[in-house]
Amino acid sequence: MAYSDKVLDHYENPRNVGVLDKDDPNVGTGMVGAPACGDVMRLQIQVSEDGVVEDAKFKTYGCGSAIASSSLVTEMVKGKTLDEVAAIKNSEIVEELALPPVKIHCSVLAEDAIAAAIADIKAKREEQSAQKESA
Amino acid sequence: MSSLNIPIYLDYSATTPVDERVAKSMAECLTLQGNFGNPASRSHPFGWKAEEAVEEARRNVAEIIGAVPKEIVWTSGATESDNLAIKGAAEFNQKKGKHIITMKTEHKAVLDTCRQLERDGFEVSYMDPMENGLLDLEAFKKEIREDTTVVSIMHVNNEIGVIQDIAAIGAITREKGILFHVDAAQSPGKVAIDVDEMNVDLMSLCAHKVYGPKGIGALYVRRKPRVRLEAQIHGGGHERGMRSGTLATHQIVGMGEAFRIAREEMATETAHMRKLRDRLWNGVKDMEEIYLNGDLEQRIPGNLNISFNFVEGESLIMSLKDIAVSSGSACTSSSLEPSYVLRAIGRNDELAHSSIRFTMGRFSTEEEVDFTIEKVREAVQKLRELSPLWDMFKDGVDLDSVEWAHH
Image (cartoon, rainbow over all chains, first blue to last red; front, side, top):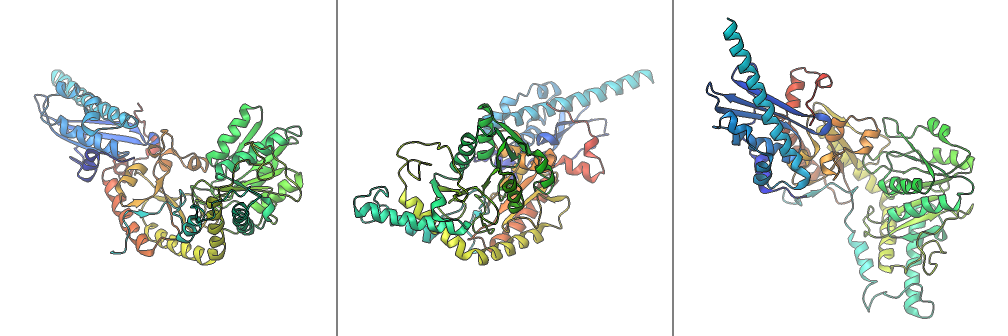
């Protein structure tokens, strides 16, 4: 089973590996998957006041395709608004990385990670505005 | 570094390259100038010469297991031998009983054969190994019933290299009058085999794990006391009616030569394997959070199966791109389930996903082992830097207590 060049590239030169401060009010953190399944992705996005993704970081426990999918996602989200990010489909990841059928679930997990990160930042923002209102 | 053949092959348990001496002996049995006759042709020298070569090979295979040549039946490989032994014995003895005992850690050739027999109305007990991979003899005795006719236990496990105490199991089955089949595909040349001492009735062997060609194997079938089997392949009655089909002289000669070499060179080769294996283990054992799968002592000398916690197996293999190894990770099998062998010895899913099997062989060198140690340490470190689980571990989080968002 040979890997596509793109997948190998993301592994050799992963983009945006790292950690953002999950307690930072402008950071949304999404962690999906489970060790028992062999795939865990943590995606973090730094979002400006007006809802644009300024920075993104990831860490992944999983096969080469899973690592590449999450690495690619951190590239795809930078500079986009939250709505644009939410519209990213796993099929775009599959195409870009030339993932074979047996690895499509890696791209689905990456899509789930995005959704989880967005949900987290939205929840934080709602809480913040709720707090402001009650103050 | 200049003598390194990249990629390095450390997957000898999957298959072995054919030894040059073996290839030469096979090449002599192909063309018009060679020994190409049909060994069953009784009426001319072409047949007689081929038959002679086949019988010489038969002697070599018999000798390494302590059998006589008449007890060796040629097959297309250990998979076919497993089928012939288990189905053949179960079917022949079905009036006596229809219960079979085997282990969860057996090769698919045994497990799937048993499943097929279950579809045909037989009952099979699949026993769990202990954590070190060995069969619990007390539990085994309890599993035996009045209607048990066949027991099938492999000698050396292909994934974790563990060696079963075949003699102890054979003593039990002999006493109960039950047929004992042993899949010994991984054993010749690595561990001593004596079918009489071990009380084995049927033994599966193949050439391609012993520096012989793929596509040829043998089944040992005891004659004293006589073991009878229902043939699975019909047509001509070759091999005393047990396995029909023209004998492939070149394949058989190859297997015979491979087994002769294995017998003669076993002592030096196992010493070499042990040295290399220990070198590899010593080069990595101080790493944090790594687990050896299977017993270190009751193990063939060239096998090492290690789980590297918090790193997934397929990504590790991808990262070790200049080294050929295999993994117990689900990603590398075509199902999404981790190694059933590792699960059976009690490894949880994470550790089964994180395992790598290194198997050394006749042509492995110290240089290759040193290269491997370096690459493994580098790769594991890099992948742990990428791993959220490693972060959590370092932060003191108990991963078992986390609620994961499954998809």
